[in-house]
Amino acid sequence: MKPLEGVRIADFTVHAAGPFCTHMLSQLGAECIKVESALRPDIFRKPHAVYGRNGPASFDQVASNKLSIRLNMKHPEGVALAKRLVAISDVAAESFRAGVMNRLGLGYADLKDVKPDIVMVSVSSSGQTGPDSHFAGYAPLFGAWGGLGFLSGYRDGPPMEMRHVMDHSVGLNAALATVAALHRRRRTGQGSHVDIAARDVASSLVGDSLMSVSAGGHIERLGNDDYRMSPHGLYATDKPDRWLSIAVGSEGQWRAFATFAGLAHLVSDDRFCSADTRHANRRELDVAISAWSVGQNAEAAAAALQGVGVPAHVSFNTHDLVHDEHLRQRGAIVDVEDNGGGRRAAVGFPGRFSVSAPATIERGTPKLGEHEDFVYGELLKMSKREIDGLIERDVIF
Image (cartoon, rainbow, N blue to C red; front, side, top):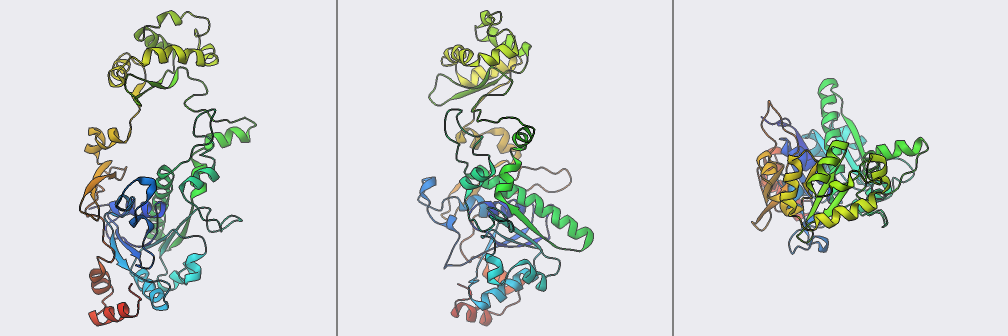
């Protein structure tokens, strides 16, 4: 049995961050019913130039495992039907701009009226309250607002735009908060409204920098540098765009590295004879290491350095991750089926449980409205005549 079996989610989320939250919960066993409309289907069902695909951008990455129904929530009967769905659910999740659900008549107070112990999860750019709560936003803005973008990128370049890593971090935080709210409900019988601000999540990832600044420190973009370690960074190897990551943290590691790389003469060089001097002269040291690394096979060099106790590894690209045996065996990378019947790699749930069934993806990406017979017919006990009438009135549309 999976940890969240028996939990049902009415999923009103769109795009990436909110859907990734419910996607994680569905892998834990929750029955997740994705609510969309043909008038406004999830944008990730559409081709997206950013990802260079002719088909849906990454819908299968956040919607596999889910059930799909159509529901026009701009129709008064659609709002009433949404409430009927919430009334038989444990969680109602949404990721619209703050205030949208209230204007639809589906805010937390409205949902409590039909399900007093409902756990409502709202994922937005800046939260449901505060002076910036009206702002909409996508992943690059989350990182920019939260400070993560400023700390990412080349030392002498601009802040680095953060994309899906930001959405997924927000979604995973939202999933954790949802589980906490469900645990509280189980102990107290009380539901709650979980408010997740994406920019808050970004700021939570740079807590060390925030602490340093609050103590009077100065923070700048480091690129691949470290505040203390040297050598520390990514070094080009004998193949284009194949990088070797090295992080030397002790004198023993430095001597082992220098000996292995044929740079033993640098150990006694005044510029590199201590951690402080190496760090102060790290640009000159990087030149010497780069001259060595450019002739190395990244995989072979990483393995050999590890063998002599030096932290080193190939900087994995997406091809490496998708085909990595370790990630595959653990289910961290899995294959999912898209709407066209094809299969491609996706991120699995990152946790493992010793006393429950593993989190898995058990069905492919749903077609729009694919599970209406089950949801409207079996769960909500609606007759075919009633369903057909709602379709004719564009409530189910």
